[in-house]
Each structure stands twice: as C-alpha cells, then as structure tokens.
Image 1 (cartoon, helix red, strand yellow):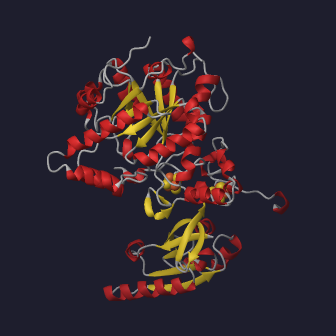
Image 2 (image 1 turned 30 degrees about the vertical axis):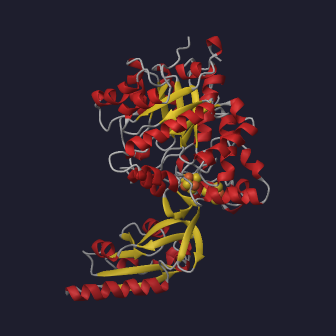
Image 3 (image 1 turned 180 degrees about the vertical axis):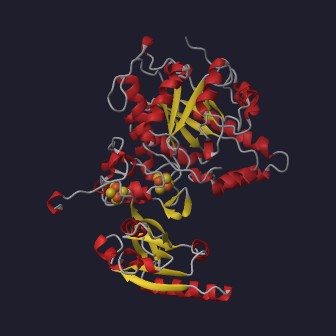
Length: 313
Length: 222
Ligand code: SF4
Ligand code: SF4
C-alpha cells in the first residue's frame, strides 16, 4: 500500500474510501488523432463525475488508444479510468502499458476481457487473449502490491493503480454471476462497474446475493446506467447486445412517451434508477455510460442530485 | 481427427491453369473420414476438372491416386516411380500431405486442394466441430472434459464472459458458449466450488506460440 493507506491515491479511491456515493462517467476516444474531438467529449464531464472511463477500442473498433486518451485527460486535469482489454495485447504489452499508464499519472484501471474482434471493423484480425480478465486483475495487483512482474522479476517502481473489473449481473448462466464477481474480488478488484442495468428487480436480487455473501464489504460496486435515447435504441439493445436484459415494459414506457419525448423519458428512468441506487444496500456508486451523449451528463448529474462532487484530500 | 474442407473449384482450377497433365492424390486418413479428400472426393474432383477443361477445349489428364496416409514417408515413397510424369501433383490430404510430398520430391510442384481447419469430430452426419487446439498442456479435466482453450472464442480460463447469452457465444448464434456448458455441468453435479479456483496464466510455450513443435519418442528413435 502506498502513502496515506491508499492503493493508488486516485480521486475515485479517495471518494469511495471516504464513504461518498461515487459517480463515474465514460468517454470513447475518437476515431482519429483528433485531440479537439476528445476534449469536446470529455469537457462536459468536468466536475460532474469522480473519474471517466476511457474505453479500449470498444466493440473492437479502432480508436485512439485508451492509454493516450487517458494521458490527455490527466494533462487536462481530469481523472481517467483507463480500460484495458485482453483481446489485443499479450502479457508483455500489457505489463508494459500498465507501467506506462502509471508513469503517465493514470491511477485507475479497469480490466476487461474485451468484445471479440468479430464485432468490430477489423474482423480479420488475430485474437490474442494470452491471459483473461481474471488473470489481468491478478496481474495488476501483483505488480502493484508485490512489486513483481508476472514472471516474479522485481519491478523497480511498482505501478500505482486502483483496480477495477466489470460484472454483468444479467449474463448467463445467471446463477453463476455472483460467484464470478466473487472470483474477481478475490483476484484483486478494488471496485466493480456493472453492465448497464435496465431490469431493476433482477439487479436487486443480484446485489442482495452479493451483500449476503459479504462481497460488498470487500469491494465497491458501481451500478451501470445508460440512458435510453429512444425506443429504437431500447429495442436494439434488447435484441442485439449479448448479455443485455431490457424488459418489455421499459421499452413500452419509452415508446409511450411519444415522438420527441422519448429521450426525456429515458433520462427520467435513468434518474429514478440513480436515486434508487443511492439508497440500495451494497451499491457504492453509479457508473453512467452516456454513449455519444456526454453533453447530457451535467443535466443528468444535476437532476439526479449528484452535484456537487465531493472533494477528498 | 483433422478436419478439412475442399477448396472452391475455381481456386483449384486457377492453380493448375498452366498444366495439362496432373496427378491427384487422396489420403485414406482423416480426410477420408471427414469426406474432404478420400477416394470418392478424388474421383469427383478429378472428373469435374476434366469436364471443365474439356469444355474449354484444353483437355486435362488427371491421374487418380490414393495413399494410405500422406503424413508418413513410408507411403509417400509409393509415388517415387510416377511423380515426375506429371506437370504438377495435387494433394487432397490435410496441410501435412503436400508438405511431406514436396520434401520427398523437391523437383515437383505440389498444390493443396483442401483447406485444413481444425482437430475435432463429427457431431452429426455431415457436421464436424472443433474440440482441441493442440495447446500441448491438456487441462480439460479441470473443466469436466470440456476445453475452454479450443472452444471458447476467447480461450478464457475463467469464463463465461459477459457476452454469454442463452447458452450461445457472443460471437455467433452458431457457436455454443462452452463456458455455459461447463458452469451448468458443475452446478448440476454440485461442484460449483471448482469454479471458485484461480488458474494461473497459461504457459503457451507448449502451444504453437513456442515455435514449430516436435515430438521425440527416444525409445523409437534408431
Ligand atoms: S486443453 Fe489443450 S490439449 Fe487439451 S483439448 Fe484443449 S487445446 Fe487440446
Ligand atoms: S460467450 Fe462464452 S464462448 Fe463466447 S467468448 Fe464468452 S465465454 Fe467464451
């Protein structure tokens, strides 16, 4: 553990350790070297969230690297949550990027398997998956806490990273999901960000099991929220996104709002969710993924009563 | 066994365009069993090639041959007397065949007529599925006899990933999520605790990643 008892000393870690209800956002780097475009997406999040996830070639579509975009955030005085997937790098590149990220001042890292390359714009590529997300979590922990590489060689200055992992409460087989979460915590996940939640009854059940198993004492769980922009988006997610559970009555509700009012209805639902999560035992925060809707984050944060964000020193 | 598919006819025709007299060599091993390069497939391909070329007005002589196996020098030797009587030799064996042939007969030209795909077996008549990726360190006993290396699209040792839905893999509705099967079986048999174990990163040196592999059985080496 580093100075002050913090593992990385990231803002997110401080906010969570101080017992505040955390609020994280998300930003997909641009499909180009366009820094201005990245700034356009990240600036609306300034002061609205405790950390910003920077996606790693999400859905296997090539974008500016998550490490570079995270670094640009650090330089702009924002806090990134650097995402890394197992699809594109072997253990050599991963460890090198972990050191690089820490050297660049990045203090949070989210460890993911990554969408298969067949989803993206280079389906012809080779997939790497040298190690999986569980092993990546354990790897970052080993590097940080033991100061050793995977091969046990000593690291001269270990990386300082607050380790995150993902959990999909709605993936199949459902009965196993809470155990998979437990495995990730055992491997070293300091915090968890869940898949977008739409089915609240199912999520309540999931979090109750996590609480009963004592998991929420060992990690911080941030509930995933993505506001629906339209009934079309809701239907698409229900139909085409693997591992996503969008209940029919939610689709009906968005549709029922009528033309021009669906986005507002989607935001209303997201706000209701956030308000419920704030009161929900075992939930330590919300991860808001407003995909290509970053400029709406201030409004959602405001209306959900998430402002101002706490400052912890 | 090794599963292969016949290459598209056009690709084969293109390969042998310059030639008028070829030998087509099938194999009685795996490709016979998976109906890609056995006697029947040799006969069909040979006559298809002949007919097509006849129509073009450039008749093609195709000599049909079958070898016991093309992955064994002993059988490859059987072509010693005839191989050089043809402009080219086409192999219907897996990728090993044309390579063993060209090693034995360096002056001849050999062409593959199948695409060699994977190690697996027939799950129903006419359908074959992959089962093993030849990683060189078998671990399937940890997963109730199901291989996550070959059968999970991401070779996850700790699955299933978040994309598993309804027993199917996120990659395609044609792919079963092997992790779904592993977990269900463990739950069924009351061995869910097995899945709370952590598996260290795999050592891929025994797989293709360590470079081309060799197997030496000392007691058999003269
Ligand atoms: S673990 Fe390795 S050797 Fe065993 S079946 Fe899977 S790929 Fe083949
Ligand atoms: S859905 Fe299942 S088979 Fe496909 S990558 Fe995920 S765990 Fe592997």
